[in-house]
Length: 365
Ligand code: 8OZ
Image (tube, helix red, strand yellow):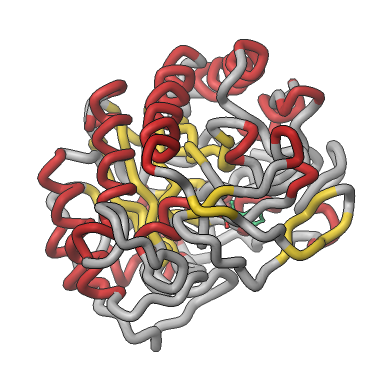
C-alpha cells in the first residue's frame, strides 16, 4: 500500500474517538451482540468468555451476546444468564478482562418470549408471548434445531413481573462491572413480539394501536434507565426483520422518538434481515434516525467502505460488525491497515469450546 493511501485510511473518522454518555470510545466500530452458546453449568459465562471478549477489546464498544434475564427468557441451549450471583461473578471476569485491555462493554438484556422450547422453560411450561401465536422458526436445544413450542399469552400482572425482571437484570449487569446495558428489542424476541401486530393481537393496553404495542419496549427501557441511568442504556430494534408488521415505519418512528425523549444513549438498528446487506428494504432509516435524538448505531452487513460512506453522509454515528468479529479479533486494526479478513467457520459459531471461539489469531504487530 502507498503511504498516501494508508494516511487516507487512518484519517477516516471511523477510527477516531467518540463520546457515548460518560464514555470515550476509542473508535466508532462496535462489536455486535453474537450468540455463541458456550456458557457453563448454571448458564455462567466461563473463563473462556473472558479471553474471547478481551481479544476483541480494541472495538470502540463491545455489546455482549444476549444474556437472558430469567430462565423463562431463555430460548437456546447454553446461552448465559444475568439473574444469579454465580452468573454475575462469571461476567465480572469478562468485564475485568475487557477493561484491563482498555475496552468498553455493555451487556445485552434478553428475553426470547415465544422463541423457546418447553425443555428450556421452568417446570417445562409453555414459553410466554404477548399472544398465543406460534412462530415459524426453530431453536437450538438438546444439540439439535427443533420447532419452537406453542406459547401462551402473558397476563397483565406477568408483564409487570417481566419489566421488573429487566430492571433487576440491569442492576446485576452493573454489579458485574458492565459500562451499560442494551435492551434487546430486535430479531423477533419478546419486546419485538409486542411491537409488531404479526405477533401481538392483544386488546388491552399492550396491544392494538402503535402506542399500545410500543408500551412494553418503552416501559422496559424506562425501567432499565431508571435503574442504571439513561446514558448507560441502549436499545436494539429491527423494524423489518423477523416478525411481520403492518406499519413498521409508524411503529418504529414512534418508538425511536419516545426513546430519544427518555435520553436513551443509543438506538442500535438492524437495518435489514440478518446475514448481509439489503439496501432495498422498504423502510426509511433516515426518517427513523431523525426521530431519535442521540447516538445511532447502524448494523447491516457493513464493510469499511460502506460504513465510511454512511458516516460521511451523517447517516449513522457508530457501526456494529457481527460475523467479522468472530474470525478477526483485531478487526479494527485489520480495517485500519486494509489487512485481509479471515473467514468464519460456520460449524463452530454456535456451541463447542475454544475452537472457532478463542483460537482465531490476530495479525502479529
Ligand atoms: C443467532 C442464534 C441465536 C440467537 C439474535 C440472539 O438474533 C440472537 C440469536 C442469533 O438476536
